[in-house]
Structures are given as C-alpha cells and as structure tokens.
Image (cartoon, rainbow, N blue to C red; front, side):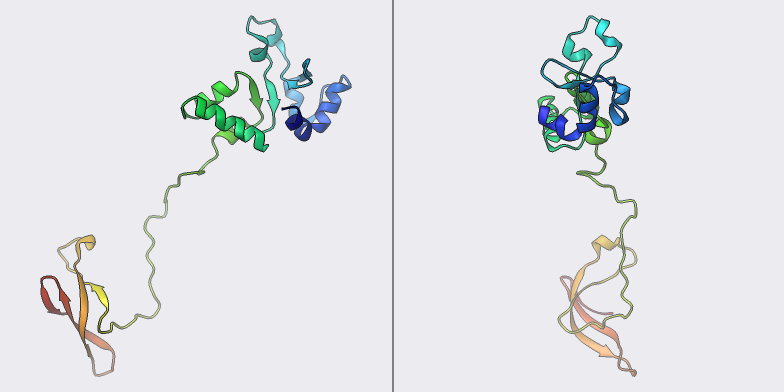
Length: 176
C-alpha cells in the first residue's frame, strides 16, 4: 500500500511530510502519516470510541490496479453482496477516492438495448433463386411462426424480374 500511495499521491505525501496540509484531491481529508508511513484520513473522529483503523482509514487512489484487486477481494469476501455492502466493508479499513465510480462502473457487464430491434433494409432487392431458403409470410400468423420453405421454381415477369416463385414447405407446395 505504501508503493500505491507513493505512486498516486507523490505531491501530497511530500506536503504532509513537511508538516503542511496538501492541496488538491486530498486537502479535504486532512491527511496524516501513521507510524507505518501510510496516509490516513484525519479529522475529528480521533475523539471517538471507535478503533483507530475505523476512525482513520488508509487513503487509496481509485484507478490503481492493486486497489482494483483489493475492491474485488472485498466484494468476493462479502459474498458478492452489492455496491453498498462492498463500500461499507471496504470503508472499515480503506478510503478509496471516487469509490462510488470505481465500485459501480456502469455497463461493465450488462447492457440495455434502448433502440429496440434493428431492421436492415437493402437498397436493391435480391431476386430469389432456385434452392434459396425463404420465410413464407402469412397474415394471420406472428412473424416468428412463419414457415420456412425452399424455392423450387422461379417465374420471371415480362420485364425479366422474378414476380412469382414456387416454394416447398413441410406442409406442401405453394405459388407465391
């Protein structure tokens, strides 16, 4: 954890070591160095009856890989409880900056389709050929129930464009 803090809070550590309150992201935490050289949250809780680790949790950055592993470990130890429980358990000993963003990254593993189904329409229709597999549309049947058929004959119109086909389904042969 010392290495993580040195990498993330270099300027802040120097300020605290020189007896000054650091500027920037740690200023509001009134940090101090404990006997092990770790930056901890300071403040008025020193007068409370809680144990020292709870009163003054260790300050950690949110984006360091070691912190991510720590969050994952706490999450697994809380039996994959959820964001609030993971944060509660984590804050017993550590204070992760921007922890709400770190723990609850949006759409990390799930997503919601707000657009609905996407339909693709070709600019030019492709003519059916003998052997093609097609869906036979029926007005009184939902689309997911339309039968599949194989094109067995094509009948082009006077302009050369296929207007009618003969298809074979499981139930018989039809002209469409």
